Image 1 (spheres, protein in one colour):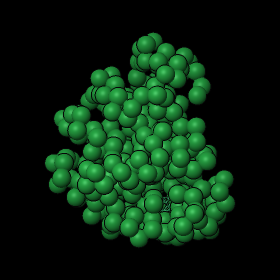
Image 2: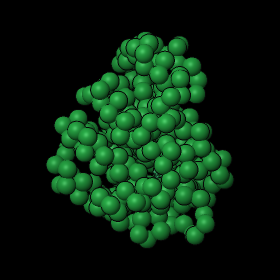
Image 3: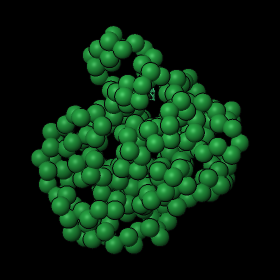
Image 4: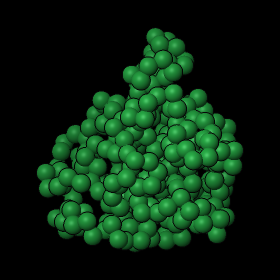
Length: 274
Ligand code: SF4
């Protein structure tokens, strides 16, 4: 993790891969927060403690980013609600290419937790211009076009979602892939204007996640039962074979080092957890 001492006030929050900028001030992080993050002490904190700390420091300007396509996000939302339902915010990005199972899960979560999911959409004029010039299935053609599509459909809306937050919560785990192996429980998100990013499950294993999901009957995406550990856009997700990396079902036609899109880019060179 880089030192965060240089991350205080920046008049414009840059949004990573989309190249867009969002004109909102960065949060004024206290010296105590910066010191804590730099100390590495939080690596040993439980997921509950990370979330409680996040609520204390940032509520109501803190929210979970969930794709509704991975069990980790659903686990975290359940945990947040056990800690304090009134502070539990969740946002997602509807890229326009999601499978029906993901929409079904959003409605189940909405009903179960009695929550309004904050849904962000890509900007219609940008999507229209992109598909008019490059076609609807441009992402299969080149890495550049796939990243362009992720930039328009995911990264730009993510920038808008984060512009109103001082901290966000993600379900990243170190064990998900090699590119996520050094994920920290609490870090400063340089890519989104120096806000705080919480990864409460950084040290959890896949078995830990499954145990929790089962024990608490947490609703998850129906495609997991069909071999999809991670569900993104329908066109860019597939089931994996036994023994394959958990992320192998995303952008499977690309080489390992290019399969990312910008959401968690620090770990994944142009990466995505959404
Ligand atoms: Fe486009 Fe595929 Fe990225 Fe979805 S995952 S935004 S369809 S390239």
